[in-house]
Image (tube, rainbow, N blue to C red; front, side):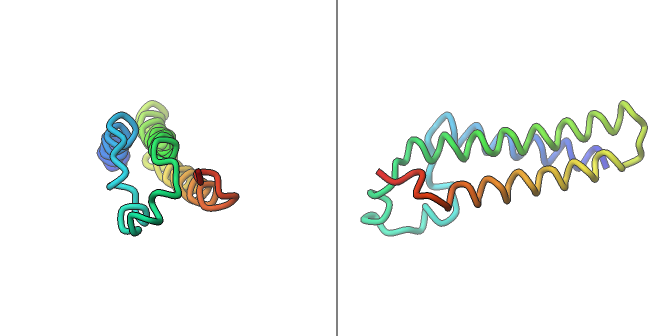
Length: 105
């Protein structure tokens, strides 16, 4: 189970780095398909910074769960729980980003 955490954690970390460092807003679902007029209403830099940081946190949850599972010899219990934490981080981040017009100009 820890292998799945390691692979997923590294992939999510890589995507987070690409979005955060290179301001690649084209990888943000919903934003990339919006018309140009709609995208002009948002602070793209703040949005990419937030999504990148969100993915860093989600990646940390997966990687930590995998490492703790190995260290504790928990046979997938801790790794499985880290997927619940990952899901909570992603859902919480999406709700936070979509409420309160946080990234509007």
